[in-house]
Amino acid sequence: MPARNTGPKLLVTGFGPFPGAPANPTEALMGTLRAEPASTFGAGALETAVLPTEFAGSWDMLRELYADFAPDIVVHFGLSLRAEAIHVERVGRNRADPDKPDAAGQMPSSGRVLGSGPDALPATLPVEEIVEKLGAAGVAAALSDDAGAYVCNATLYRSLHANAAPRVGFVHVPPVGQAGFTEARLAEAASIILSATTAKR
Image (cartoon, one colour):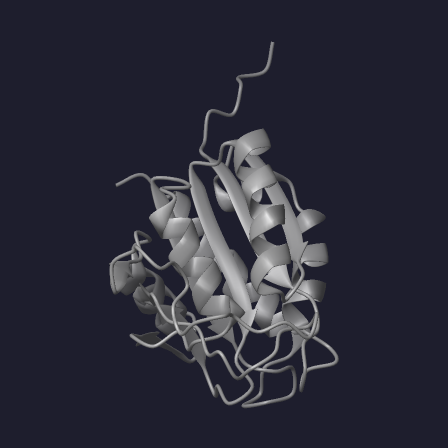
């Protein structure tokens, strides 16, 4: 009887389109990752999801995923239109731009993600190791202390605040075609990131 893969349960998410980005490369990335066995990334189970780029809708979907899948590791991927490299976020901040509508045309009622939450929460992925491994593979990458004030940051902050998993983090990627990033290059980078998060430490 083959040995059971006892690696961690890995949840990976991307986003759909949003104003200014009719095509979101993280949506296609989820399809690529979904086609791979969990063991490719050192995981015992793999779940992928494309979240709506909506303050309310994304969290509604995530809460169901957390309840049903109970992940050990959560890696969120999102698009940064200005990025020239992979940005591995170090912190989620309790801020939300009340003047920037999401994909549903909705805007947060205040400048905060959660009214009673702390101002910032640190990501719990091995962020320095991830950037190091990306660099060693020739992938342009950097640590970031500013995940913005849009749905990406809100998703990271909410997941951290909810203690969704022992390891939670967010990675921003550039648009396809920018700074030499192709779909294949993004998939390579994602594989390195996911494998770094599941490695025993």
